[in-house]
Image (cartoon, rainbow, N blue to C red):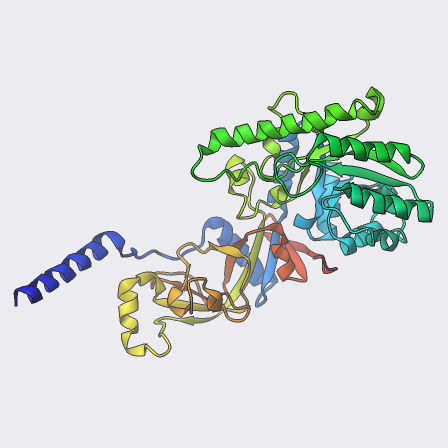
Length: 433
């Protein structure tokens, strides 16, 4: 009897602790003014279909912010893999006043060459391409605007063999390892040998600069003093980069060095360059910062505005959602979490993003078969839940803040939103990797 009373007391304590501390409080689901206006625009002009949306006003604001932050001492290069739309690229090239692109995908490079005035472009590879890509891309007009990225002497010799065979002249940028450890020349000796190969074959090869990506800088492990270590890591990048540039000065004169492109940076680090004295970097590449997707919270805190959203309309609203196979205990789940009482089934889903609007929505973990929630990320009739205090109805849109810029590839087109209205659309890129 005494043991039974102790068990009851323990259960009572657990219940009180859950109700007071753990149990989720009921949250009202409602649109912020921004998403309310965006919802009205979609319901009026694009009803009943899932859509990716680019807010042009916010995009313009981000361009202005980035240009002002970088100042006049750095050339801006657009990272195409994070901006997968030729029309978006054209828009940003005009707005940001740059002809510099960082390219990664052979099909995308080919489409860029065929679409734009290739002779006016400055293309820099963001990763090395196999030598097999050279003869294929050489059939496109303006292919000689490409600065091919070389990371090893072996690849350099393969490129040289192609150039000799086709009597071609290749512009080369050498990839250097400045701490990311993802390839590139890691020692001054290897680097110097590569530079000499290029100089000795000036008829076929031309060194146009270096690329040293600093992508590791923001990702300091949690067990290290983060901010001071980020600053230290950033400083180490500049020091290592400087060592490679100093070696170049032994092979080229001041005028030649002044014409070279020393690329680095990214959306997570670009804002650190203007305040750093003595960096050799003169060319900053970035893409995601223009759209400020969800995984770039640091630039959002800095002042960038989220400009890309993925959306889908509600096709069913069930006021008191039942669980399959557990209908009789469904009421207990509402007691456990009152913010799952109402279920909304969306026309589409599986978008790579986080719920952004209306507020108060959440994924229904009772529907998920595992902790990863794959069943709730189906591209057909995704499910989200809310409390019974809500203002979301069939036909209204649920908005996701895309994790990355390439989230727009969920759609053939993205809708363009400006001053409360849908004002057009752009095709997304579908050419392959």
